[in-house]
Length: 115
Image 1 (cartoon, rainbow, N blue to C red):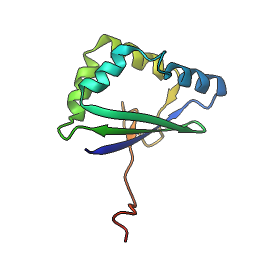
Image 2 (tube, rainbow, N blue to C red):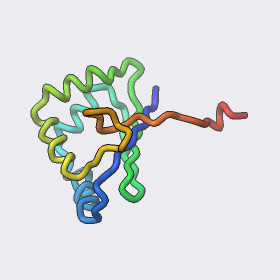
Image 3 (cartoon, one colour):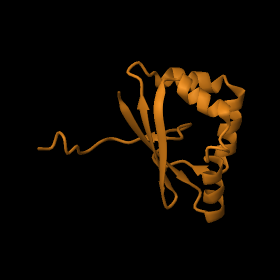
C-alpha cells in the first residue's frame, strides 16, 4: 500500500490554529468529507502539526488516482464548501504551484534502504 506525504502551512495565529484543529476533531469533521476521502481509495490519513506547519500522511490503495480524486472533489459541492472553510485557516507554501494547497514531500532518506 503506497504512502504519500504532503505539507501545508496554517496562518500563524494561535486562535485560527486552534479553530482548525477543532474542525478536525472526529465529532466536528463533516461526514461527507470522510466519505469522499474513503471513496477515493484512501485507507488512512493523518495530519500532524508543528507550529503552523502541517504534514499530511496518506496510505492509499494501489490503484489510487489523485487526479480522479481532485476531479471528484471539484464536482462535490460539500467538499468545495469544506475547502472554502479550510482556506480561512490555511496559507500556501511559498513554493506551491498556482492553485496547489498540499505540496508533496520528497523522501530523501530511508533507513530501510540506507544500509
